[in-house]
Length: 92
Image 1: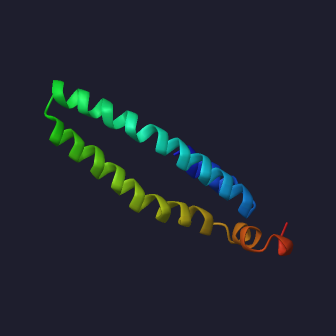
Image 2: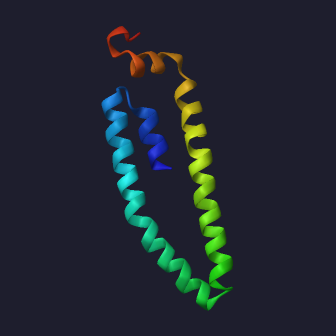
């Protein structure tokens, strides 16, 4: 969620690049830890298979829906697209 907010505030391609790189590293570090927690809770509550299914399904849904939502956030402001695609022709 923070990634969406940070990307929508970017005004250049290099800013978007660094934000996406940071978010990608953060997700890459957190997914194994979250998977381990889901397995431990699955042993205790409802079964590892069921909880891992929901965890992976929600993760994949985020991967599919995330770019669509972010694309719509950027496209909502036509001036922002001009700044991102061609910074030298910025409206502001």
